[in-house]
Amino acid sequence: MAAAFRQQTSSVLISKKQLHSHRNIVKGMASANPFTADRPLQTNIPIYCRKVSLLENVRIPQPSMCLVDVWQSSALGPIVIHPFGSSLERENFAKPPEPINISLMGCAATPLGNLHTQRERHNVSKGEWISMAASTKRQWQQLQGRNRLCCSGRIIMAKQIGIFLLAIFLILATLFLFFYFDGPFLYSNLSPAVPAVAFVLSLLVIGSLLRTSFSDPGIVPRATPAEAMATEREVFERSDGEGVAHTRSPRVKEVLINGQVVKLKYCYTCKIYRPPRTSHCSVCDNCIERFDHHCPWVGNCIGKRNYRYFYVFLLSLSFLCVFIFACVVVHAVLVTKEKNFVQFIQECPGSLVVALICFFSVWSVLGLTGFHSYLITANQTTNEDIKGQFDGKKEGRNGYRNPYSAGNFFRDCANALCGPQYPSLIDRRGLVPVATQIDIRVTTSVDAVVP
Image (cartoon, rainbow, N blue to C red; front, side):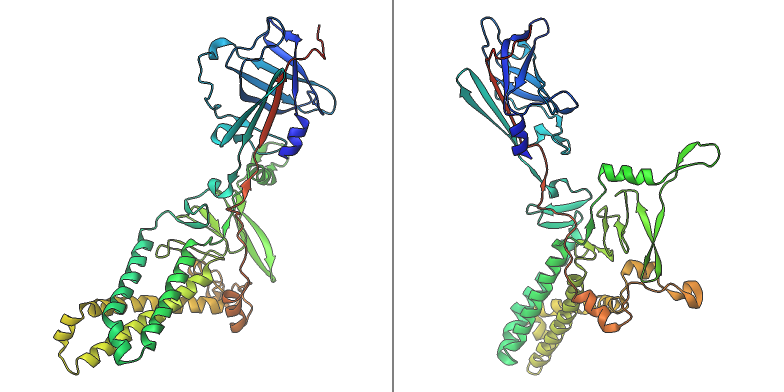
């Protein structure tokens, strides 16, 4: 797009006889594939120029700012440059342009002053070539919602990560105490495989936790202004008989999934009809595909793209808690055969701390793992289970049937844990299309004479 634009606006020729001194307007003719004034393609782009001597007593103040009006055309047409005057003579020549909005060839308007700009000046025989380039932005820099993005958009989390940091601290502190106080004894007196198994489980717990926390849970992009306007036009109604126009707020749409009618609710924040099983997270302020719940312990939403990692985290954490608690008990039993329990506590105080943490944590972790195991076999989410969307008791014997369930225990488990990894709907590393290049050549010429 930038190359095409440069090809169409390669130069502007300024001549003395094209100057209207009473209006300070210099009119020129484009030398390559110029434009006519059908409609504005780009307007009011501030470009800093040095003094350009035309013929005889015609001058543009130094330094000066010109506003360039470029008009789309299919035939030869004018390009107008307006010099501001001498009020800018004492301005710093290196001052960057102020932020303004531009729109090039259908691209979205972008504040040019907020972008990284480059300005190059190439002297020519009787004038100057001014090149002005604007760099692009990444999609993650414009992501809406209340998410925290790090590492150039590769990591996405909720902004409230205090409980997540507490969970990381508890896991790492417990593992450190276990390997420091219990690991050496179990390695030498029981088997080297015991601390090895604990180490493998620890890596699985930490890896699955970080993958759950740092992944895109399935954020649905918000509607663009054009898409939001199209949705508003869809719900525009006219009252019967009188023709008085009024609008009705969109509520739901009904779609058919596996013979079951499913209602798609309208999200007033994202301006979209939510896809099936999608819900808006009030913490992250985004719509999440297959929304399960927002988990503060992992610092992220649990949705379509990170649910399997969340379940692996729960399952491995359950095994790790039970395994470490059993190892500490075995350590205490073996030591108390020769010493009393008080001496064991004095020698290994960390073992008591590890046992207490595991004992009080294992019940909630095991309960949560069992609950999500049930949800996987039923192909439901926590959000659907709480609302009772597929609970037959609410509608008698002919209650709502789950249209997403395969009707088979093993197929539902395979779909949830071994199915394909869905791509992210937000291209966080993608580039935002913006104006990239503006080239203007200012020189002296008497090719075109305007009386």
